[in-house]
Length: 167
Image 1 (cartoon, rainbow, N blue to C red):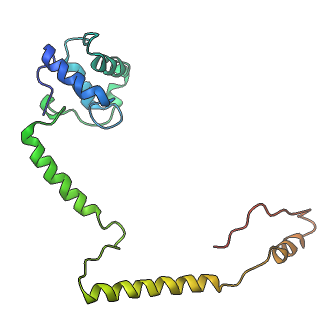
Image 2 (image 1 turned 90 degrees about the vertical axis):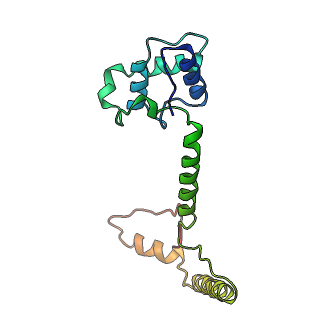
Image 3 (image 1 turned 60 degrees about the horizontal axis):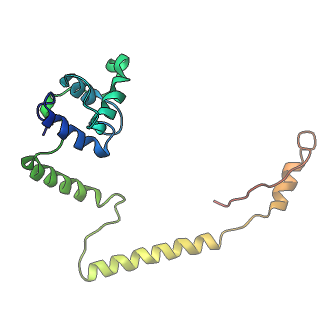
């Protein structure tokens, strides 16, 4: 990882390409990573590297708030585009993270054959029974509610029902 030597035009070019679709070095807020890269620069990037120049001017506006930015400064090589060697490690880690996310609500059960069919039927039956219980519930009219509220004549003058939800 890394941008290379940021005092050279080649390093600045890599930084410019990296910032073409990003506002900051890491994530979506200014951090110590941005400060570390700014400190590695010899000055403002040239005007032809406009993404890097935009980023430089933006981060320089946080100059008085450097200590309040989140994160911890790392070595300069830890920031920037991914090298080819790092890609294999990153893709393996991302695929493992994707596997962990597949069962967010505990609804993903891998059962094969007759067991899967039986479990599916049981779940459908449970859902149908819950739906039937909700339809056969007792409904209250707004008339009874209105009468009980307006019975407090000393405190309530009139009443309008703006919205009514049954939960």
